[in-house]
Image 1: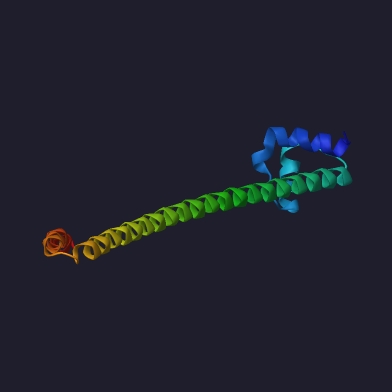
Image 2: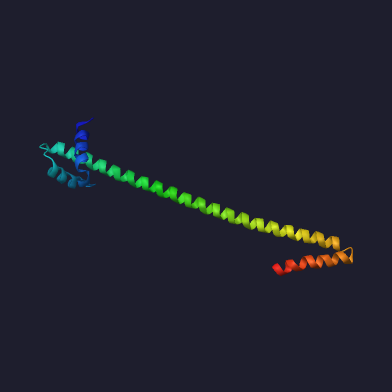
Length: 132
């Protein structure tokens, strides 16, 4: 492992909450928590820490976006299922009404030939009219 990465990880393990996304602030924090005599080495370590923190924040935001998008897809799917269920119930009701109408029509056609059957038709249609 590279010397810069090793030093940065050692510092981050102990003091990760002290660092942020700003390079200058990270250099100041590094001065407070460690003794690095070389200006170049201090800048490289602070730069690597800044890069590492920014990458973590970016990955966390991407992860949250994926979670939110999957939640919204689940909600859309459940809404679609509810709509399909409602539509199928409405279609079932229409089919039942159509079937009932066809049965009544068949009864009417059969009963028109004689007067006794006509009386039966009147009795059958009267309860349906009351339910409507």
